[in-house]
Every structure is written in structure tokens, then in C-alpha cells.
Image (cartoon, rainbow, N blue to C red; front, side):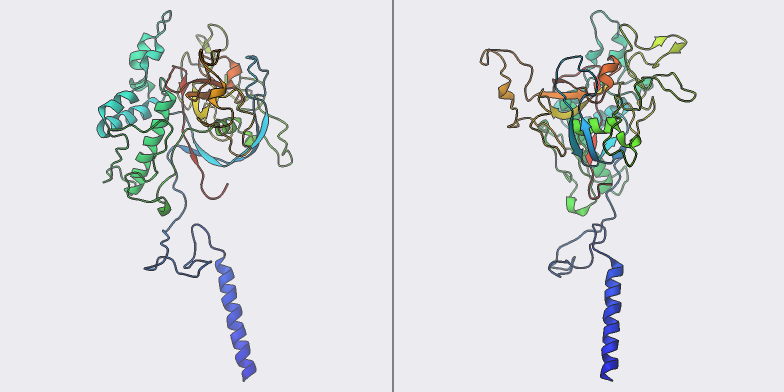
Length: 417
């Protein structure tokens, strides 16, 4: 009898263990009923409150970029003789990035909400500089009036925006998308985010993701902040090496000069064979080719979905417009840099701005300060050299041109895949 009782208890124990194993280990989406370290049940009156979480919500307009090891830096001859982007190996964590550049229609939407919800002073500061089209010896005057607002240019990249304006847009977009999520996805949500009220956010500052929503980060209901990509993220996404690497080719021996395979600028396949793969300036005075046989089909900017996307699914990572990135410019950014998710911040202690003395105090002139930001990618007005992901240029963060736009990025949470 005792033996039978023992067998019964043993069988029950085995069944319980099997049941536990079948349930599996706790995960972000299924943390279990109680803490695996204290045994205290979650969501009890005095216990830790764990919100239901299915997965990170999908951010509008974003493409997932699987991270990995890569070689950053210029793979072309350094014709500018800057020596400011020497090759180095780094690892980039997975992240999300806009499928296309931010377009005029998106900026007009932004202006509408800013005018309604924010101070008049900030609304005026958010207006793009349309005078960037004016040239003393070129008749681009119609673009000054029509490029931003005329419906025919709706899905052309917004230009005339500074780094500071682009950064402000990212903050606003974070708040507006999360407002929609917090209201259940309806356009008539009860919460309004006036994050640009009487006092403007400092350039580069990140507003809390839950600003104004009454919803915490721990709830899992909110997306991480939209932001400008780092230079390393942008370059990695433009390379899109994921499409050319065999399993055994971990050394990435076949680096790309452009965001597509090969050394040519024309499409080598199909019905579009011979057509250019990006919007750029072929040579002096040649922006689009001859009538009846246009090469890239665009005298200025072009529709943001023009030309084939790269292997990550991103459009116009070469040409059309240059794009702002987070980093301040330093000619030695390839030195003294982290090899995981590298970035160059303003006010950093490595390679500080004070080492680039400007004016009489330092005895020489320099354009390098903590207010100078990197832009990449080449534009409709640039020759092919600047289409290579490794090339880089810089401009003051409060300046704007007709050749620079931007796209947003976002951190990936949880799994790297």
C-alpha cells in the first residue's frame, strides 16, 4: 500500500514537472503568474503590476533593419582628400527606419497640428526655408512658391529644413503616433499632445515617450521615440549588405560602392535596363539627360518611391536628397569610437570642439564646432561620388538647403531579429 502511494506521488510529481516544462520559460509576452526570483504573484494588490504585452506595436512608415557586424567607411577613392571616414569594423543593433524620406505632405500635416496645438512662435520656426531654391543666376523662383504646398509635389522629399527642425519633427511624430495608440487607434482620441507649447524643446533633447498620455513606458502600449538615425545606422542601412552575403561569406568580401550590387549606376536587368538607379547629377549641366530619353528622369527632386529600393526595402538611400543624421561632425570620427552602435555626440570629451580652435583665440579658423552635423547620401544636385554610403559632409545644424532632407529611425526592443 505504501509502495502504491509512493508511485502515485511520484507520478503526480512527474506530471507536474512535465506541465511546467511544457509551459516553457517566462518571456516578455508571457512572464508567468509570479516572479521567478521572489515567488510573489504579479498584479496582486501589493504585488508588482505587469501589464499585458503582445509585442512592440508597429510604427507607421518603418522598415525593420536587422543588425549585425559591418565595415563602415569610404570604399571609393577619397577625391576630396578629407581622410575623414577610414574603414573600421563595428556592430549595429537592429533598429527601424523610414521606408522613404519625409515628404512635403508629411511636413504640411506637421505644420497643421503645430499651428493648432502650439505657440505661434514655434509654428513660425517650423516653417521650411523656401528661399533655398533662390539662386542669383538660376530661375528657380517657382519652386519657392509651389514646391512645398502644390499637390503635385506632395510625395517629394521636404527640403529647406534644418537639423534642428528635423529633430523637432521626430519629437512631435513620437508624441502624435503614441497619442493615436493610447486612444485606441482612432483619429478622434481624447488626449492631445501640445509638446511644443510656450517653450520650445532644446535641440537634441528627447521628450518622454509618454508625455501627456498618462500611459507609462512599462505598459508596452507606447512606441519608443522616433529620432534621426545615427551616422552608423544610416550608413549600415544604406549598404544593405543583407542581400548579397552568402552564409559562408561572413567576411563580406564583396562590399558595395553604392546601395546596390555592382559598380554601375544603371539598371542591368529587365525592362528598365539602362535606366539610372538614383537621382543625381551625371555631369556639369546634366541633371536628367535629353528629352525623349531622360536618364534619371528628374531635374530636381523626385517622387520618394522612385527607383528600386535597396535590399532592406529602403527607397532613395542614394540620391534625391542628402539626409541629416544625429552625429556632430569630426574629421577623426573613425578614431576613439565605440565599436558597438557608434555615435559622435555634441559636447563629448573625446575629440572635443575646443581642439578645433576658431578665431583669434586659437590662431586659426575652423568650421568644426558642436553645432555642425553630418549629412549623407548624395542629392539631385550631386555627382555620383556622393552616392556612396561611406561619404560624408557637414553643415551647421540651424542651416538648410534645397538638397538636404531626412528620414526617421527607432530603436528595436527585445529580440535582435
